Length: 232
Image 1 (cartoon, rainbow, N blue to C red):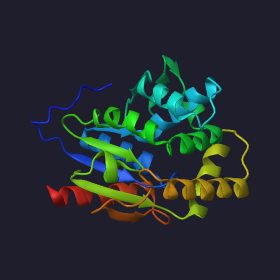
Image 2 (image 1 turned 180 degrees about the horizontal axis):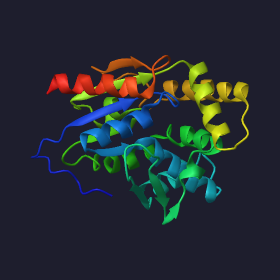
Image 3 (image 1 turned 180 degrees about the vertical axis):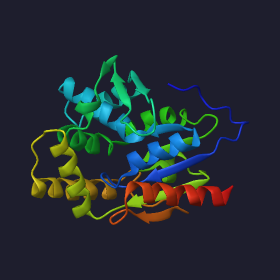
């Protein structure tokens, strides 16, 4: 875990929020890599909490037990470049594939709706902010965690396009997938994320909306970097 930021030092932050499958993870990693900044995958933290909960067979409604897990989570991110997937370790074990499963993603959406869990992870996320800068990827990075970020992006795409992307991703990994079922899961998760009582998924104040439905990753990255360099 990164050391807590020295508040006397101004450390720039770019937040990239949006629903699952909008491309925000890949976009965020590439921007962080090109700028030479740190990277925070906040969604991975919630997925790690969900995985730990599943492994302990704790019901998603047991808020106090899950928030305790969140506060004591032993996590390590190893990012070798901005192109490939980062290595993610939970209690010393690589769990990158496990946390990307549909079961873990669905469970993460449920635990993320628990106020005590969000509170437990809030400072841990803010501690990733350190020099020379941070690119933070999630659902409430600009609206809650880094409200004073220099640049806020809300990256979106149609549910149908996001389902297609997920279907292709699973097939490329040799995993079975049903496009109709994926679309339904995405729509249910979107509704849960957008309607939860705490930090609902929505563009932050001042966020720039970017629709990636018909754009490739390179185009989205270039557009966001252009916006950043215009600011500085």
